[in-house]
Image (tube, rainbow, N blue to C red; front, side, top):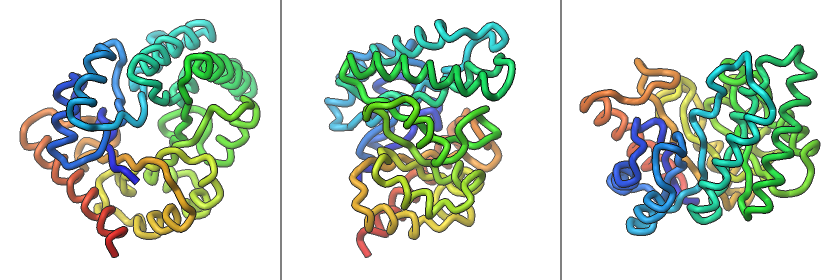
Length: 270
């Protein structure tokens, strides 16, 4: 299992900057979580290749509509088709689709919102498949997104979308909020799990909260998980979603990431 970093947490978007930081932190890859319009795909691919880093996913962090009340399916699909094109240029890197739920907030009720989400996911997943790009759906907590808060809900969404192009991302922080049993959620979804995210109960690194990461590690290993691990910590005073803004904060976050990677690797060493 390679260990990557989810790049929005770094507060960086430039290709040279994010790839250099990942190497500095001793990581194997990046989940590029940013606005695809802020970097040239060719530039990001070049720097990843030069440094030997794997780009495990493209995660459009600014995926919400600029005017939620005026959001439309057509605009949502058009935005994500551009993200898919970006990912294809990177070398068929998977694209996360959970941000599509943010385009449903102007729907009349939860049923209409769910139906829109399914239609949008089907359209984008179909286009991605034509482009040779796999799709991923991250299960996020109910404070952050309006739909799909548990792995079982995501499995049902995947069933409705159909095909076999979509896989799952499970995040320890999000699971701690909405999963009745996070350990069981991992066990039940190893067959479709592509990426596991590390962040503790308060969204810090391993050991900053109460989550049993050794148990998560063992479930993944015992179940034959062959996907990716990505670290996604936030400093305590910046939770839940603010990146470092100065040198001391960046240094503190670097320590959290390095310590978390060391802890995770130590589980395997034992």
